[in-house]
Image 1 (cartoon, helix red, strand yellow):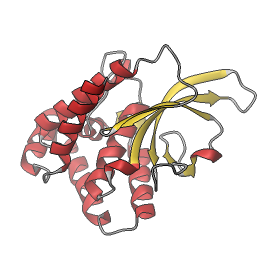
Image 2 (cartoon, rainbow, N blue to C red):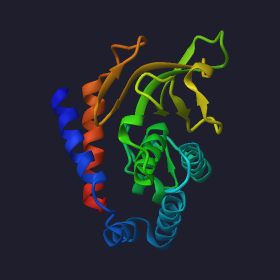
Image 3 (cartoon, rainbow, N blue to C red):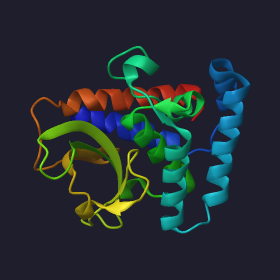
Image 4 (cartoon, rainbow, N blue to C red):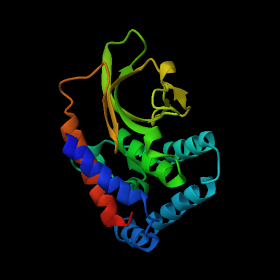
Amino acid sequence: MRGYLLGAAFLLAALCSAELNINKLENTMQARFGVAGIAKFHTWNLLIENNKDKSTAEKLKAVNDYFNKNTRFVDDIIQWKTSDYWATPLETLGAGAGDCEDYTIAKYFTLLQIGVPVEQLRLIYVKAQIGGSTSKVFQAHMVLGYYEQPNSIPLILDSLVSDIDAADRRNDLHPVFSFNSDGLWVGNQAQPQIDPTARLSRWRDVLERMKQEGF
């Protein structure tokens, strides 16, 4: 597991230390999603440029609203013809669709580009309680957490809820584990059927594909 994290950290550092290769990203988008994809890429790039000097709260809201309003929820098996696929931000933008992991990854990298430090962001696997506080129905879900300080209660950016709320106000979400390039955190609700190593191998794969696309 440590090897996956170190490899991911190295790749993420490389991705975030340089400017976007706009020409390569545009060519990739053109080849895969055509003129409509190029238009979406330019809108996303404008989102980044227009929010770099904003407050953190404004950055979080802008990015959360952008993806929640412009991305349709579609299961991986329908969108990517496989049961569990983690899309790159470019793929999510081009398709205009994705599942909870795709929303979260796209928001994560967009916020990094806008200037939010990596140590303040974590991708969080949760069990989402469906149907109210007395329901016994839970569904695997991923959200993005923003931590003002390492031990702060995070703010939650969720593909299913438009408002950004503190985690202690989201009683429907039960954390399993969270991660970024710096490490992995296991919550009290860890489930044996969720394999962090397998998840992190997909994380590394996303970083590799992003690099090939022009990040």
